[in-house]
Length: 270
Image (tube, rainbow, N blue to C red; front, side, top):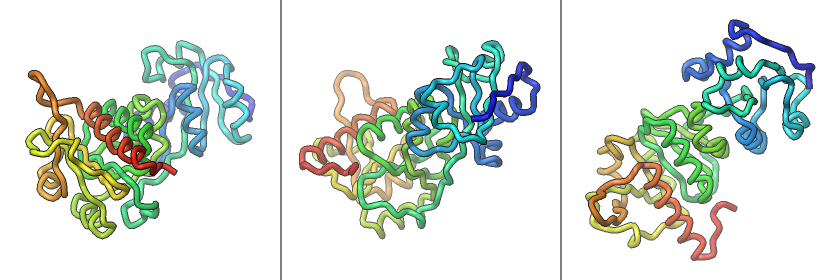
């Protein structure tokens, strides 16, 4: 690990470059993104992400992180006041990494075994996106397909709300039409949760070739998927509540997919 460079000004070019990574256009241009927090950085390292720059308060680097750093990694020591101006968090823990992003591929590059996957269609809120990916990781999903209008998976708030587990996924991106054609070719069954559906989630049979489609917070799943999905189902509710936050719905649905696989003694995450 290089000897840390002490920086005390927000106007320093290296600091300004890091702050610019909060903007999605700059992330796309550079292929870099921010991971903030000791826990999240440890997850990024676990999933094989490469750290380009490490910023921390007053030379305080957790030992396990220091041991994993390449010799050519830039290490920048800053004051607590400067770190608070860089951080996206109300109560930062004093460490932030700039990592190299993995390329988001189209579906022609998909080469994983047939197993349940998740399609995100036009999600708008990074917090929900991150919470969904955290649940997906907990319940054995490993591939995510992004349809048009979906968020950048390297948005810092996606990473924060997933507790870093958004970095576990292989992300693919394609149009509605190309996604549907690919799913049909690969013999996936597509499922959409809809309050208007007649069948309950308890009547659904989820197998390895399951594709769960989740839509935006306000409009829900697009008309395209409502029209073309193989199965529509509802999550039964009582009382006056007629809908759930998309992240909550995702957790319920993905748990049911996972539960059916466990009940059948198949661990599709292996």
